[in-house]
Image (tube, rainbow, N blue to C red; front, top):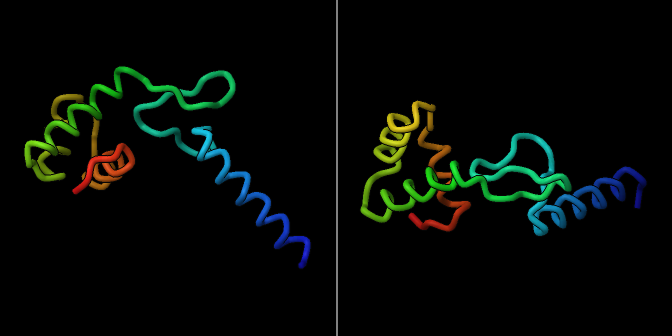
Length: 95
């Protein structure tokens, strides 16, 4: 096996392990979480409240568009529909 392929597989395995350990792997941090001094995700209560509000609205049968519009209006921060969908899927809310 060539060296570059071996390196790539090792990096991929390390990234998967870090994801399983709930560790930050670079880029933007997940909405609803802060990072501790060891780069582990810890829940951010302010953002977790927004996520719980999204989950509640979704369970009441509101569309992702409606959830995005209401959350954007209440937080004065833009929440695109795709972002709302991604957050709710990550947090375990089924469609």
